[in-house]
Each structure stands twice: as C-alpha cells, then as structure tokens.
Length: 207
Image 1 (cartoon, rainbow, N blue to C red):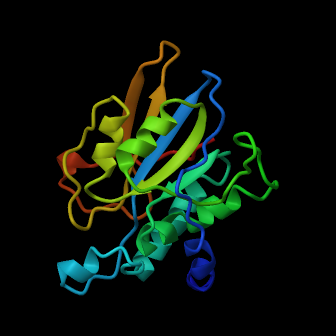
Image 2: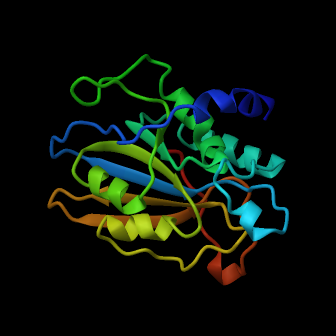
Image 3: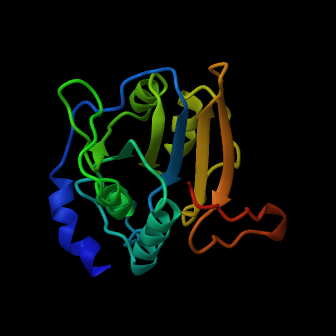
C-alpha cells in the first residue's frame, strides 16, 4: 500500500487528451470493466465524488487494487484506461505498471504504449475500443460501468452498483461475426456482502 501511495503522483501526471489504442486488424477484442476500489468517505457527497483529484483509496481499497493486479498478473493487456480521479488511478496503477515489464509496446503509428491512459467520456472511449483489437482494462465509476458496457452495443446485467459494491468485473468480447457480448459479472477480491441468491462467482485469473 505504501508503494501505491508513494508513486501515485508520478502516474497522475500522465494525462492523454486522446487515448492511444492498438491498430485495428479485425482480430480478437476483450474489454474488462471494473469500478474503482473502496474510497475514503467523509459523508459529504460533494467531496467524496470529487475528481480533482478526489478521495484516495482506503486500506481495503488498496487491497482490492492488489487483487486486481493478481487477477491480470499472467495476462497481456494492450491498454489500461482510467478516469483522472485519484481513486480510479490508484485502483489500476499496479496492474498497468506490470504491463510494461517487457518494455514499450508499439500501438499506433508514431506512438508507444503508455502504462496508464486517461479517458474522459465513457461513450467516446467505448467507440474507440470497438474499432480495434486487443485486450484492455477500463476502470470506471458506479454510474459509468453500465454506460460503458451499453455503449459497446451489448446488455448490462446485474443492476445498479450499490454505494459500497466494488468487486464486480465484467468482460465484453467481440465475436467472429462482429457482435459484442457481455459476460459476468464475477467477483474479485473481498466479496461484497449480498443475499445468497445474488452471490457472484469468483473471477478466474485472466490468461
């Protein structure tokens, strides 16, 4: 947790007006979508929902960020996308940093792979990703996870996220016919307490 807190200012300085994504080649596309991990709450919605830079993660949130990292530890991601909020950046920081272990990866002409990329409008990001191939992780908010999935042209399942529900992971994939299918949700890290009939399966490591 100390590592995340120490190197966060370096990552927060990386902001891209136009997210860089892989060149289109009509190949496989997988997009994983999660909400940020648990955040510090003051009880003041104006402060807690702020994004300049907004609240940090709690200890439980940093634990969930580590669980996310573990989930993708054997995966090769072509991009990790976050809003410019402290809580989303901290959620994906280690996962994104792991993806540069083999050096920079070319993505589009004249550009190189960035460990963490910033997006603003969920619908714009979804549109860009729907036109390319590769494997991507997107970190959003309680009110944008479903919006991103639906902007990709598929159905969001599971209903609204509860205020302290941070364990859902969704996957959207493109079929060979070009259709988009949403899978999940599954639960990663410490599970959110749900009624038994609404329990989610545990997420499998992404390989």
